Amino acid sequence: MTMREQSYFALAALIDGPLHGYAIIKRAEELSGGRIRMAAGTLYAALDRLTAEQLLRVVEEKVVNGRARRYYDLTDEGVAALRAEADRMLQAARVVTERRAPRVRAVKPA
Image 1 (cartoon, rainbow, N blue to C red):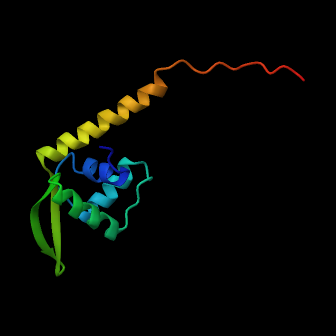
Image 2: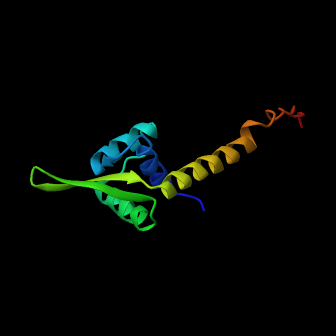
Image 3: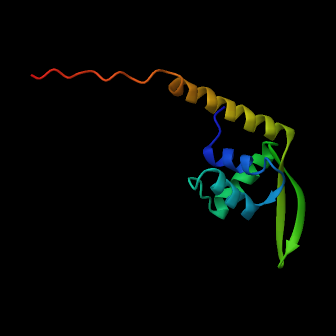
């Protein structure tokens, strides 16, 4: 199964431990070199889906400034899925990176 890039970086953001939603957004952006910029609605839909798939779990819920703040962490299944996707991408990259550079062919004038 191929994982969406946003899901991959949301999971990768949690590799060092639990984070709340906004921190996941910022960490995913940082890890992706700025390529992944998730809106809150996109992130929370992904977090709900990843939680339903048992790749994440809510480990804490606090009220901060009158709003609920959930902290998410990877499950063992989430760690395994993240590593499997990283391995899949590495294998795909090797198809290109481990080959010789293409030869430049001389073009004969017409």
